[in-house]
Image (cartoon, rainbow, N blue to C red; front, side, top):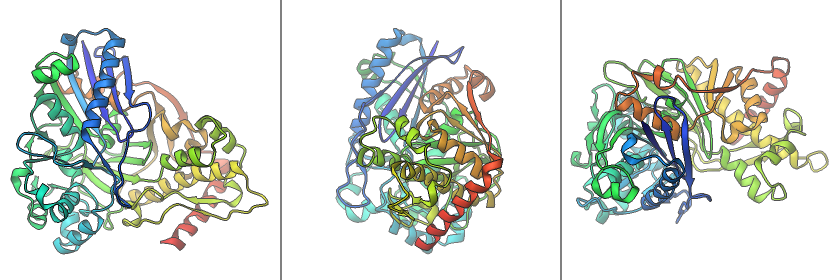
Length: 494
């Protein structure tokens, strides 16, 4: 018996097949091998064509099925995870009306800020747990004002994972977690927010049927079965945005547990059991995967847009003589803690929520042509990312998060010993690294959705811990001195 996980990222689509009883990964693949195209017609814009997600899902899926040799009838559940906050619009025939406005597109910031003030800051925060900000609801408001001819044709709105589920099943649904990440959910009244839809003028008919995060949400249609080589009727039994799903992948379900990722953007995600929020909305609070009106489980999400994208930019534009990120890490390790006084502010990937939606751009401070080398810049970049995490984690602590341990997958920036050791030492938290990823987590969760696993304990019993990083207490003063210098430069900017 096998379970499939689909992870719809902005860089690639990953597909994973696991054997249900053992939790063992049988095959996994991603597509494309180069990053998927993001279209930016104007500064601050970011769009992708959802059809590209489907095409790359099919390519990765075909490779997994070929490698595994598994028969379609032995696949008993499908889980889906996706890049959060994207907006997909379809007409009554389920045809796309425009490209998706994805997570890092910042055009809707003014719409969210105006809504925040008009509806009322206290009312937004106490009911939505966030400002409308640059999220899906505000993106839809931008479409309404700037593309009215498209808005008039809308039958349903979706998030990226809902689109994939639609292509698989020809049915449209959305979870409470999805509604909350779009800033459509009223946590006090446990319903779609009347304040948001009335202010923005969004018809209730635009919203699909609400489906459970775990459970039989839909089944694979005949058309999709033929396209993918699946069995018609295979259940789609789980869906969640990438950050709640990443936390799930690391077995983070309960209050006080913390998960982190450090890909193109970086995230620290902690679970709360009460309706708390940051009054400046610098960190966000969404429904976690196991949220119900009876059992409050909220994910407090710190997002740093300028994370791995800074490292990637340096590799392709600055460290071109180095063949890999491993080589970059080796060169960075030649520089001492604090990078000889060099500080890099990594916020160069659009408006940053943690800075109250300011777009400061990336900047280098303290460079000295006589003492600094390429390695110092590479280390300062990684330290700058770490310091941005700590800056945001201070906000999380102020709303009740006790950050003593951070769980992360052994991937992306967490592959760097500099990054993970600096993060552990600055935050004074132990870091546990696990051999998992979003697609594996979605596959395990699909098993929960069909009832194969009795609960999360059984589903994640085979999760493999591969490393533990402890704070370097004897060097903590050096890390904190570098952090305070970095924070001084940031405060001058903002």
